[in-house]
Structures are given as structure tokens and as C-alpha cells.
Image 1 (cartoon, rainbow, N blue to C red):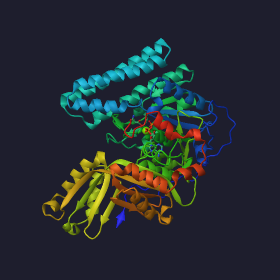
Image 2: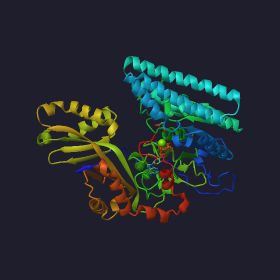
Image 3: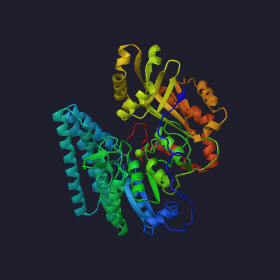
Image 4: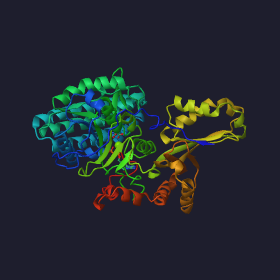
Length: 549
Ligand code: ADP
Ligand code: ASP
Ligand code: MG
């Protein structure tokens, strides 16, 4: 028997009564003609909000605010959008900064103070250069410079406390890693102010109320809606653009939490849902959602429209362009999401809508979780162990680990499950603890970990009906000498996942992409002019490596 476990999104999700479709009716002026696509608000929203202009949440990722010139570009996009929309802007840390902050936190725990000093010195230089280049007014530069020094001081004190204790608590790690967003937001808000657009920088600790699960906190939506509306609505109504820190929130006691790496996308959709926005736009460094990760599959092509369900599967299974949870808040409210390129704002990007671009049956795109680990629980006596699956899932829940894929042989009850590498050790330890009695009595022979695997996922509509799909994948991988270690198919109509050795992930993706002619199909269905090949851009810029911040 094979099955796969992950939260169901889509069919079981609560969709609003009035779905909106995206279509164009505008002759509005804008510096970027395609920048603002008019969105008809639902009746529900019209009744709920008295605002006359559409409300858009626009999130800019790390590469979009990588340096002063990128920030200027971002400010232009915001100014242009502000001509005909109300806006809330969400900003990430400058590219690479969160990685450096986490490195400083880890080095503090090891007592390596010299490394921490160096990291903070680099961060001061990087932010100082952006400040000097961006802000003309002496008074503003002085004010923001002081604000930055306070934030750096806070970070250094947290690192010093960590070094003294020789312990990096999850709470301290969150506080240290939050500094990147808290440093970048005042810069963007100040550039907007200087260019004549009223704006205010706001820390999301004032808006997003979360549980206390540091490093991967979940929002309490009712409280978040209350606070965000109370704080942001008056600003929006007076024409001020709130510029909000991505990635962070605070628990009910006001202690800072983070939403997990890449979490600014999630911040944007949480705020979109909280404010019942008309659209959320994720501005990033590629043209939109592509048929595969362009760093692994150079032939990947732009998808111009895709369903919530398919996009959520791609995000969940490794498409880094969206944080895995990004779709959840907007699905519940039927709010359209767009992915657009900060460096080519004239392009339309990808539109993510409830139904997507229904072509009936077929493969839409591929994704891969390259940092996966496979845990195997096995042994001839396992058939006699009570409720192996139930206990395994209860253990996963207890240590907050998502089981990405599971495969079971019912004759002996042997199971293998795949989790993200970062959770593998704690899951292994928790399982060994849970089954310690069975291991001691040799009912379970072993619980082992293989940390060198990857999951490849094929996403599409109604894949169950796609004749011979599994056979085609087997054949395509066989031609490339790629071994399949496990497979999960059937639980979801729009997802098929299989496990391969990590060294084979690129070959597996390229083979599947070619087998299903995704480059050609995407190009035929959604013609884009050749100059907007995002792949070449992403490679040539040298900015994208699979592990980049
Ligand atoms: P940001 O800094 O804007 O948050 P990220 O680096 O988190 O950007 O995400 C954008 C990157 O995601 C792209 O540069 C691309 O390399 C990677 N990526 C992985 N899979 C996909 C995909 N299917 N479509 C588009 N981009 C993808
Ligand atoms: N800065 C955070 C990170 O690098 C959040 C984000 O960029 O979305 O993980
Ligand atoms: Mg990101």
C-alpha cells in the first residue's frame, strides 16, 4: 500500500461564495503599463470595505532589496502602483542578511566572538552604504542611521548573551534573525518619503499575532485581523503607505517570533487575508512561477496562470519562489495572488487563481525538495507492533515535523517516511524514543536515516486520469540511470511524488521535464516573447544558487 500524507489544500478548503476572476478593463496610466491589472472586488468585499480603490499587498523579496539601486527600483514600482491602488508593502531583509545573522547566532553559541564581530561589521557596512546612497536629507539619514545602530546594538547584545550561556535558544535565534527585516524596512520607507509618497514603517510584531513556536510560528488570524485593521486601515485611508517587516510576528505576550525561512511571502498573504485585500503580489527575481526550478532545469518556462491547488503543491514540495504556507491564507478568502519580476515590472507574471487555467488533464510543473531525509522503520517482527502508522504520525505531530511522503509495505509493516533534513534528527530521536520498547524486544529491528535523498514532485490537473504517467516517469528515469527509491501516487489527483538519491535530482527533473514536454507546452499555451526567458537572466545574474538566502 502506498499513501502520502500532507495537509489537503483545495478540494477541502473553504472557498468563498464569490470567487473573483481576473480580467482587464483598464486604461489607467502607470509607468509600467502592465503593472496594475484591475481587480473587480467581490460583493462580499465591497460590502466589507468602504475603500474606493483596490487594496493590494505588495511583497518584495531579498533580491528585490539587495542594494540601494534595487531599493530605488522597488520605490518606483510602489509609487507607480500607488497611483491607482491602496497599498500595504511587505519587505524582506536585504539578500544574504538573514543567513549572516543566523551565522552570527550560531557562532555566538560556539563562543566564537571574533566571527560575530566580523559579521556585524559587514552588516554595518552593507546597510550604511545603502543608507548613504539612498537618503539625501541629512536629518533623515541621521535619524535612520541612529535607528540602525540601536538595532545592531540589540543584535550584538543578544549574541553576547548567547555566547555567555553557550546556548542559542529558539527565542534568541528568532530575535537575532529578525534584524534583517527591521533594518531594511526603514530604508524603503524613507526612500518613499523622499520621493513624495507618504509612508510609515511598521514592525509586524504590532500586527501579526502568532503562537510561540519560534522558528515556524503560526498566526492567530482573528487577533491578527483585529490588530492589522486597527493599525493599518487609518493609515491607508489617509493615503499613507504602510511598509511592514516581513518574516516576523509576535506572540500574545509581545515576544517576537518568526514564521520560518522565506516567511515574508507568508506575511504578505496573512496581511492580505487579514485586510481582505483585492490582490497580493509577490515581487521577486524571476518572471513568475516556472515549470521547474530554473537553477536545476534551464529549459523551465513561465506559467502564466495556475490554480491555487497546483501552486500550493509546488510551494509545499520545494518551489522556493513561494514559502510553503503562502497560499493558505488567500485560499480561504479567494484572494488572487500574483508573482511578478521586480527587474521586469512590465511583464505580467503568474496569476494564481481558484481554478487556474483549466486544461483538463495534464502535467503543469515540477518541484523538488533537495534537502530531504528518509527514515525507515523496519524488521520482520514489525507486523506484530501495534499501530505503527498511528504512533509514527503522533510522533511527527509532537515534534512539529511534516511527513512529506510515506510508503508502507503491508506484509511486514515496514515503513519509510521522508521529512525535511532540518527536522530529520529530531524526528529520528523521537521515533527511537517512541518505539524504544519494540526495539529493545527486537520487534522493530531498526530505525535508520538516509540523509542523502531528494523528493521530486510532478504537479498537474487530474493526474490520475493521465494514461501511463507512472510508466512514462519510470522509463524516462531509467534512460538516465536514475533509481527510484520510493513513490507516492494516488492520494492526491494533482500530485505524484518520488524519492531519488540527492545526486540524481537534477537528472530526474530534466528527464521528467523533457518527457512531459513542459518547456514546449508552457510556451505553446502561454506564449511569452523570447526576451523574457527568466532562466537565462537568473543564471547570468549569478544571484541564484539553490542555497541562496
Ligand atoms: P525572494 O528573495 O524574492 O523571496 P526567493 O529566492 O525566495 O526570492 O525565490 C525566488 C527563487 O525561487 C528564484 O530565483 C528561483 O531560483 C527559485 N525557484 C525555485 N523553483 C521555482 C519555480 N518553480 N518558479 C520560479 N522560481 C523558482
Ligand atoms: N529574510 C527571511 C529569510 O531569508 C525571510 C524572507 O526572505 O522571506 O528567510
Ligand atoms: Mg523568498
